[in-house]
Amino acid sequence: MKKITYFGHACFELDWNGKSIVFDPFIRGNSLAKDVNMEKIMPHLLLLSHAHSDHVADAVEIALQSNAECIAIYEICSWLQKQGVKNVHPTNVGGKLNRDDLTIVHTPALHSSSFDDGSYGGLAGGFVLKSGSDSIYFAGDTALFSDLKLIGELHQPQWAILPIGGNFTMDVEDAIIAAKWLGVKKVIGMHFDTFGYIVIDHQNAVEKFKSQGIELHLLNIGEQKLLD
Ligand code: NI
Ligand code: MN
Image (cartoon, rainbow, N blue to C red; front, side):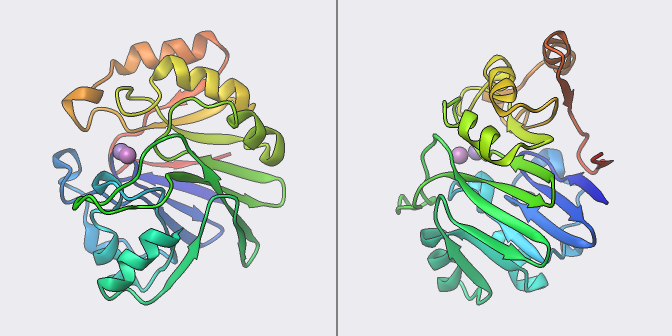
């Protein structure tokens, strides 16, 4: 059973057969997510795609309250450790690890990555999560890049969580190409509406995907969805 909950921007909780995986927490600083009760977010695994504050702002707090294992690139894990987070597992793009029946693959992305103070955040990335033939791709922040074809070929995801807001990442048009290259028919949109630069027309986005035979799901903040 796979269930996803949206906490706004690029933050999701994926419940995969009872294991909770949270991606890119940015909640307290997101006025659209003001109704999310962050104290109740208690993941087993916390995955961070890159160091920008709209992806890691609440990582330390959630890591400390949950003792989640934090999986991120080496530079982000070092930053977490300096703030007292002990349960870290540093990876880098291309790395794979197994947690019970779940395989996590750290994928590349085409984006920058630095902390708020300007210090180096390593490379931006994303993650594929796989169990048996079930496969979900969380792209992180990225431009359209041709290695999405490789990710599709290697990992054959059924679902992709893709940025669609443009300006800092892919927009809707590029995300449709990304979905085709990945071979997915079901997409969950992220990285839209949070800031003025990335406000989108929801209905127009859904219709553009639909015209290409691809489902685009835009979850409301707090909404849960079963992934089948
Ligand atoms: Ni970013
Ligand atoms: Mn971002």
